[in-house]
Length: 153
Image 1: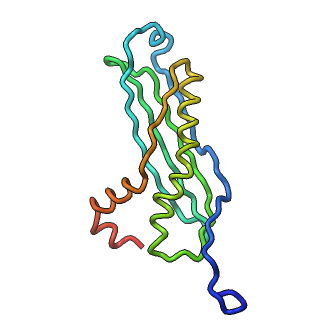
Image 2 (image 1 turned 90 degrees about the vertical axis):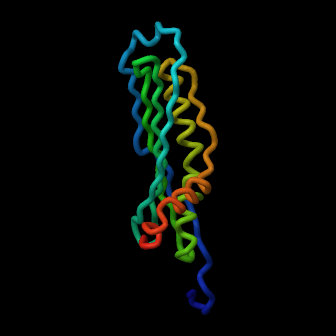
Image 3 (image 1 turned 180 degrees about the horizontal axis):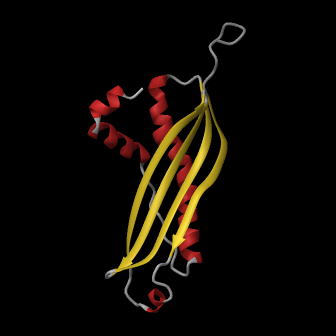
């Protein structure tokens, strides 16, 4: 409650966005640059969050891109974009949506840019990540682990 007896308004703000980790490997260079076979691209994405202080949370989106041709890894990009978010006066039931949908939606364009930039700087065509529906991913996760999600506080 504020000093005049009114409830404190909800607060959501971005305190800091940062590239927490980035890695590029071209294990079979320079031979891979002589090949004509188009690599197959595999993308893995995870997101997570942790409480830092009473109203500060770190959220992150991690993407791993692996490009392979027959039996060879062409390149591997791993990147983790993170942010510190100030979240206060939000009902507890709404926090999972903020931490698993809203925050990753803010971070994803930055991850997408890093992946594209790293693949281009490595001498390959840009890898353009398709948009991600974090709300759908969150709902799928909730439906797959209902007992586990019921006990998480």
